[in-house]
Length: 272
Figure 1: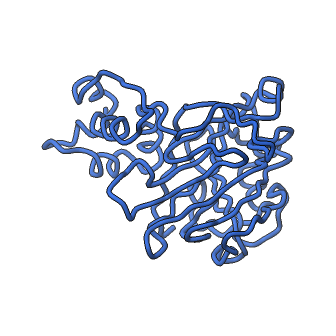
Figure 2 (figure 1 turned 180 degrees about the horizontal axis):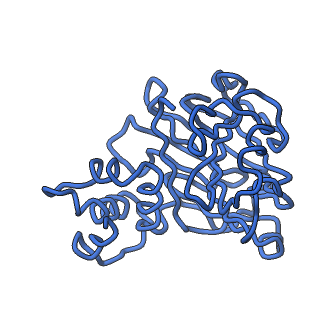
């Protein structure tokens, strides 16, 4: 891939608004990054045009029941409305995290380039499980050279592998001029559950996704690799303070972030 993928996870507040379904099916959801719960949708922002790093990326994370395999997934879809920027640079997308730590990306927008989404219009991905578009599935983290795969190809490659979580991500502000991307999402369907309905009865996710800064940083480190993470956040001679600096940056960047009370020394062990 020629783009830098940033996929992060933060536990902030459950979004599931179909009453009782989250507990019944065992899927839980949370906002991360700059995501904001609105009355009938979630606003995902990737804004690299301002000084803040808190809104460089955003998304919704769905944690799946233990033992969920790729082949067992039957429904994955959403309605989305790109209001700034649009589609491009690899997002918006679903990111499927495998138990191996690898990610499989499922892109939104028109195949094969996944750019040129209509702005300020609600559109549906359709059910991406079983989708036949060439390039819709990017499995290159699992097997090199498969960044332009189909569902059938992905099924053959990873069908038996466990999927631990699915993220709905916007992180391509860098792709647009100015460097900003905003995507509204609603009616996110993961197997038998629907999240973020249009009824406006959001489940306490308002305000932003600052949540657990250490989990955000841990997930970013896992996604981009320890060396890139250390180079990005570290400030001392060996970059061993990278994790502490990342946590501090997230905590200061979000009004609603939790206070961890740990400085560079307290978080330093995370870099080893």
